Length: 398
Image (cartoon, rainbow, N blue to C red):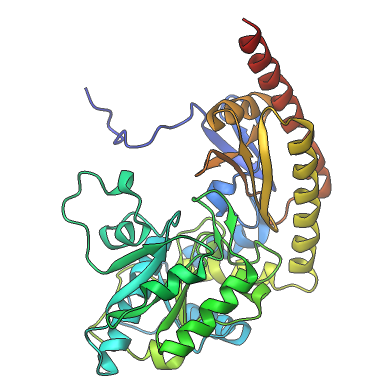
């Protein structure tokens, strides 16, 4: 008999009742160091007093009114994001997939409004992940995710990541733009080359097509910049954001330059919940924290520390790990043995890590993680690696 809760997830047998910073406690009293952050979403950790207070105070006033009316909390958050980024206007929604859907629609509509309706195709990259809706699955392009859901939404062309020649070869008379993740999180924590991002900006300018940036996982301070594309010194035309933007509260956004944002006039796109007072109160609280003087700079410092430590671990256990990679506090360590084996060993040591493509163990701790937390995580990771290495050696000897 099917469970009351749809069994479409392979859930670990862990149930958490409270958290503080980078730590979580289960209902049976066990403590875990959270280096997954709910898939890079609990950006300011668990139980942050400023976020909790903002949500509680707003919930006691008004949570939802719909976008039939002005929402001051959304207006405030949008203006702050405009002031801090390349964007001129912001659309709020509920999730990363919705943000990417909005970005796709905006890019296509902008081309149509420019008198080029035939330009609707978008170049995406092998190893990408853009969401679970039918259109964002098509943008993702992974055959495993697409299987069984009928005809694939038309209009997405896939080329190898970090390959500029392949991009140029794919641009044609029907190309509207390019969508890229500065770091492929689900794809194995693979950063784009900075020159590749600069070349994408240049080729979009050259051909008069639109550069869309998926910063759902890499944005909101995770790499030591507010958004990861800033490291390349470029600006996209349109960008999606979600995950860390609400600190765990559902919130997504599409940020855009005016000439593209104005494509979505009343009646072209919408959302019932998106940008409601409660979600935007959470978003403003998160932005209060990560925009405080020195906060993001400290994330960059801690990210370098974590990266250096993971490099050491990879070298110490060559029978388990190939290499460490990533940026800031979005890191991965590619495994030689099945990544699930390493992840299970980490959980047994009290370290929560998550998996990613290319057999990669992904570590994305809250941005408020401390140096002590990072040190403790490395102790746990080494203990887990030692046990897996012993098991592998024993199996090889038999």
